[in-house]
Image 1 (cartoon, rainbow, N blue to C red):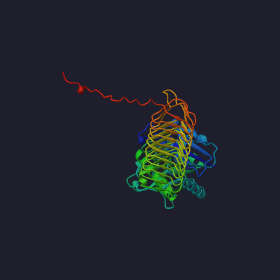
Image 2 (image 1 turned 180 degrees about the vertical axis):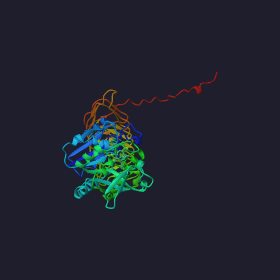
Image 3 (image 1 turned 120 degrees about the vertical axis):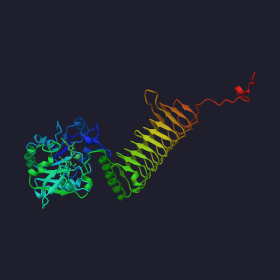
Image 4 (image 1 turned 180 degrees about the horizontal axis):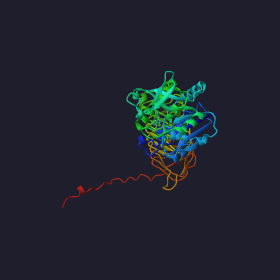
Length: 456
Ligand code: UD1
Ligand code: CA
C-alpha cells in the first residue's frame, strides 16, 4: 500500500502574497497541482493534502481532482508538525508513505517511481531524494556516513560555517515505512533556530535511512520566492520547447516564445518569435504561427496561418489564414480555407468553409454559410444595450463595405447588400438589398463662408 502526504499548509511568507504559496501559478497549473501530477507513475492508494493557511482556497482549487483527502493543520508549527496531523487519518494503514513538499513542482514521475522502487527493494525505513546543488543556500544539508546512510539533516539556518560547505541538499521528497514514521513523529522537538517541528529530524530516529541522488537537480527546485517561481518557469519552458523541437516543430527564437505543457503541436509546425500558446491548445501539422500571436484553449487544423493575432477558446479548420491583427474569442468556429483579415474581431460566431472576412469587421453571435464574403467594415450590431441577438447569413452572400446588420436579422443565400446599408429586416434568398438614403446632388450650390461677406 502507498499513501502520499503533500505539505501545503504553509503561508509561504517569502512569496509576499495573499495567495497561499502552493496556489501560485506555474505555466497554467498551480504548484500543488503539479506536485499531484508528478504522482502519475507511483499510483498511490491514498492522497492526503495537508492544508492550513488559506485552506479553503486550497481545498476549492483541488475539489475536481478525484481521491484527494484533506487534512487540517490549524497552526503551522513546521513540516514535522504538518506530518503529525496525518497520524489519525492513517490509523491501521500498513505500507509506505511518500511525503512531498507542496512547493516542489518540477519533479518527473519517473524520479518518484525510482525513489519508491529503491526504498522498497533496499528495505529502508526511510529513503530521501537529494541533489548536489551549485548554490545550496536555503536548503537543508544532508549528511551521510561512508555507505550512503543518512545520519542527519541540518537546515541552512542551523548549519555551522563548516556544515554550509556541504552541497548535498534535501529535496523535501521522502519515502517512509509508515510504522517507523508513526513511531518517530511524536518524538520531534522544536529545538532549533525557528522553533519549529522539523520533519527532517525523524531521520536520526530511524534506520536504515538512505539518500538517492536525483540526476537532474533542476527537478527538485523548491519555490519559496518569486525569483524561484520565475526560474522554475524557465526550466519548464526549456523542457517543453526542447521536447517539441525533437518532435519536428520549428521554433524561431525560442527564448521569445512560451508554450504551456498542455499544448499539442503537429509535425512541421513553425512558431515564429513572440508567440504564446496556452491552455488546452492543439495546432495541426504544417501550421505557421506568428510572429506575435497568442493562442489559448483553441484547436487549429492543418496548415493554418496566424499572424499578429489573438485566438481564444475557438476552433479553426485547415488552410485558414488569420491576421494580421485579428481577434477570435468566445467559441468561434471557422471552417476550411477561410480568410480572417486585418482588424477583424469575431465573437461567438460560426463561419462555413471558404468564407472571407478580410478587413475591419466585427461579427458577434453570427452564423455564416460557406463562401460568404464580408465586405470591409461590415458590422453586426448584435447588442441592443440589454441583450445579445443573432445574425444569420446564407451561402455565397456578399455584404457591401461599411454595412451594418442590426440583429436579430436573417439574410438569405446569394444576397448582395449594397455598400453603406443598414439592414434591419430579414432578406430572402437571391436578392439585392440597398438600405441607405439616396445621394442628392444640387447643381450650382455653393457654401457661403463668413470671409466672403464684405466687411462694413
Ligand atoms: C524544507 C526542508 C529542507 C529542504 C527544503 C526543500 C524542513 C524542516 N526543511 O525547507 O530541509 O531542503 O524543504 O525544498 O522540512 N508546510 C506546512 N506546514 C508547516 C510548514 C510548512 O504544510 O507548518 C509546508 C509548506 O507549505 C511547504 C512545505 O511544507 O509546501 C515546505 O515548507 P518550507 O517552509 O518551504 O520549508 P523549507 O524552509 O523550504
Ligand atoms: Ca520550501
